[in-house]
Length: 344
Ligand code: SR1
Image (cartoon, rainbow, N blue to C red; front, top):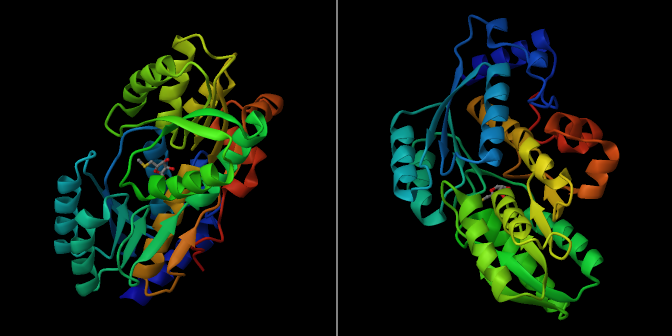
């Protein structure tokens, strides 16, 4: 059965042309599932912790486009930020015995018990941005240490390595925890950088909640020069706070992630958000689906897959006249990673 599926995947690619590196923004280049009408689609359960916000929406669009191109169906569930709900969704996905499962974010302690059951039931599993707790699963990350290093490199260059900084962080999310490790090291290596406040919340309206917190932190610490906000919802919230307080000339924001909406915020006149380190989320969604299809087809892939980020600056975006994610992916072709989980 697996062999049949792999042949079907290969047939779809051969008929439609390889679309692994095609940005999701160009869906017309994706071969359609109808290219191989007789093959049974590969059934993938996508079990998400979060689904709202630019990052997660773009990621899903990329995953869906890649699934369509590979004759796979995606059964999507979201915990909507509720870890117990995500764990239940994952239990149900294991019981439904799909050809593969993708776990997208989640807290290790809530998802690992069900991941163990998936492994025991021989359902191949791909874990994105969550520690699966087993070498049987394929783990995908965006190289979060590099994301933090790139953003902090820009912060250091602009501040000269001195000044008061507000930090935005919520513990428990694997990517944020890894970025936090880099921030901790960065502070040790740069004693002139003083963290004067730590704020952060992740919920269905993260940006506005962070904006309120950032306003209070900036009002309490008038000497702040920079905000390190390594998640685009954090950076958008911080940007709102800086603008509303009239501090745009004084406080700069160093973030993570990118979307068309983010590019709009970064490039608007007087924006304090000056740099972001990012992957193309749609590309990461495509990588996850390719890895799941490979495993479902009995193929091997590396146990850990890293999608490298790119540093995107306000200056660079403005100079290149980039207004949206499609233009960005054309200017930075490295944002597409067809060799990560390449389908033969
Ligand atoms: C709440 S975790 C948010 C992060 O997940 C993804 O890794 C994105 O990069 C985002 O920053």
